[in-house]
Structure formats: structure tokens, C-alpha cells
Image 1 (cartoon, helix red, strand yellow):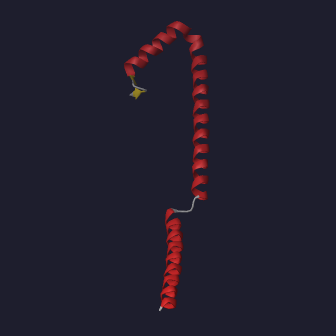
Image 2: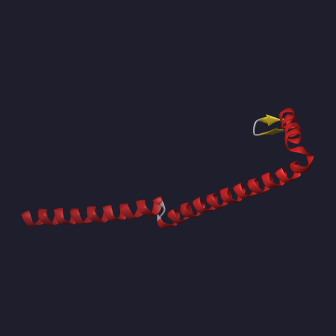
Length: 96
């Protein structure tokens, strides 16, 4: 068992010291408070992660996929090329 890099012997020593310092009557209260604190920290962390995920999803929806952007850019470039080719061939025909 390894919690936060602390093994079972270290946890046992910490619990014995806590028992000696706070006494058997205060130890359950301290454990309860520690549990509440950890629960609230976990809840805040999950809420923060959900907000980040929502923002990332909104940004993904706003941006069109790269393949669509590339297709649109290719279509526009092809239209420009076609019009330039027509203009060039019209100029050649008028010069002849």
C-alpha cells in the first residue's frame, strides 16, 4: 500500500503520533473534518475540470473541421485559377 509516496509503516507511525497528540476522543472528529475537506477539494477539482472541458468543447464547435476549411480554400483557389485562365485566354484571343 502506497499513498502519496508514503508506505504502510509511515502511515502507522503518523496515526500513532496523532493518537498520542490529540487523544482518542479528538481523533474521530479530526478524521471527520479531514474527510469533509478532502471531499470539498475533490468536488471543486471536478467542477473546475468540467468547466475546462465545456470551454474546450465550445471552441471545437466554433471552429469548422480542418478538412472543411481546406476544401473551401481549395475551391476558392480553383475558382481564382479558372477565372485567371479565362482572362488570360481571352487576352490571347484578342491579341491574335
